[in-house]
Image (cartoon, rainbow, N blue to C red):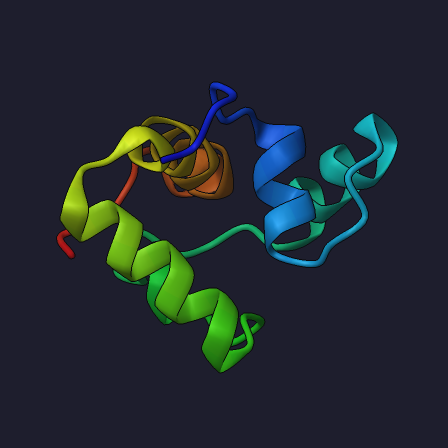
Length: 85
């Protein structure tokens, strides 16, 4: 079980990405997704990152909330989100 409530910073750490606030903001700004691209299908994820995102979303566990936040932020330019799982 995960002892700490997941945050966007912890999610970026878990995904092996730079988790500084400025790096997260830059990542989100430069990786906007079209409305028809599901979060876990984005081409910029590695297979391991994709599996982590998809599996925790499907489990609807403690990571799902923060994954949903990332999903919303990466779909801001598309006017909505798309993660049908």
